[in-house]
Length: 233
Image 1 (tube, rainbow, N blue to C red):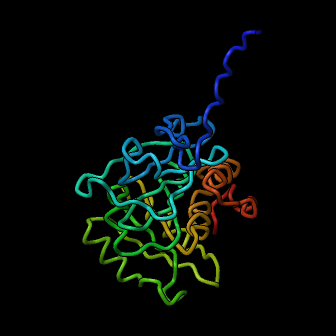
Image 2 (cartoon, rainbow, N blue to C red):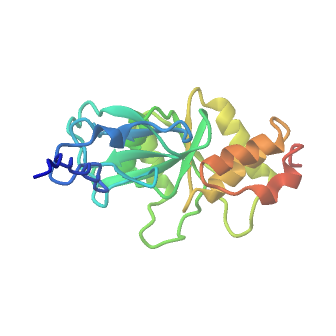
């Protein structure tokens, strides 16, 4: 009878959580990709929590229910590649979009998130959301109290339906200049914070550079192109 060589079984596919079906955790799920800017995952060590970060089509997604930090007193910080920074604050995942080394933005935060923001290295918080937009929204006074208790700078620059004013842009620039380190800005989705940051940089950098930095964080500022070559007045 002819001799048949045994056929090697195909490699087991990876599940969405980066673990081979029926096998050990797949280290390849955590290999950085050079095409994405850095991501910091605060309070989570992927070496001991292999299923906490999901990778699909080359993009990293936060888990549906974020795990608690294994060392709440000393949160672990690691680096992956993606647009956003994910900070684990208790049972919440803070989706923090990094514009550049000086500024990151996000949607609405809670007073309890301030400690995680501080642990991620931010020195100041800019609040661009007016009070009363949503029934479950914490007040600016509550965020300010939490920031001051954590030793962070706090700047209240609300941008409502009236839109942008030169005063808001000047206040944003002043807050950035007064902060000796990375600044965290938030509103409902991060768009208003990115808009004020972009306008505050007008005349300081080229329109293409400002729009490109915002785009990498997931915000389209093309509509501001005509206003970014000189200071707003």
